[in-house]
Amino acid sequence: MTKECEHFTQERNTFQNTKNCEECEQEHLPVVALRMCLTCGHVGCCDSSIGKHATKHFEETGHPIMQAVPDNIWKWCYIHEEYY
Image (cartoon, rainbow, N blue to C red):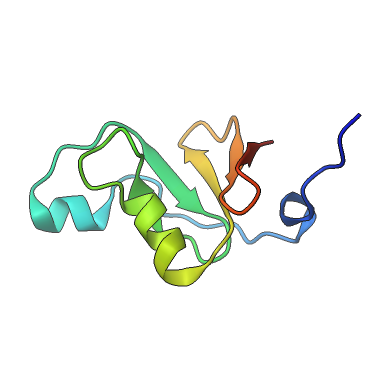
């Protein structure tokens, strides 16, 4: 049994914007899928999208956990590179 990443157990806020990647809209880029930062609520596109804005958000802020939206079926820790 592996130890669960401590970033997944930190308290999370609930955020409302799960409809678009603002950076892709501004840059007129297509979006494959969306990811939401569970620290601040930023919504960015996934790494299969041209912009890779969710990962760029982590690199700029250090916010460790994002979740797939709108389905919320899994979370990803950038620091430990693992799913939850």
